[in-house]
Length: 96
Image (cartoon, rainbow, N blue to C red):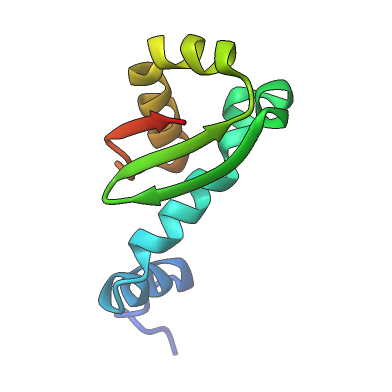
């Protein structure tokens, strides 16, 4: 006997995550995990710490010249990282 009201397991998991307010933190972790994939291993090697607070990504870098270079293209970085996650997780990046 076939049920007409059956939903896919993926849809049920998404509904549960939204209902329990877990979708945002999960997307934040996905964005942090995609940093090396989006920017490459060379830049990731100079990255000391990453964290998100109030839709702002804070990036601690060990190279001042790299920090200056990334600051010029931060709007593109925001778009690339959000696109990789598939949601608007961050609106701004602060390099330290």
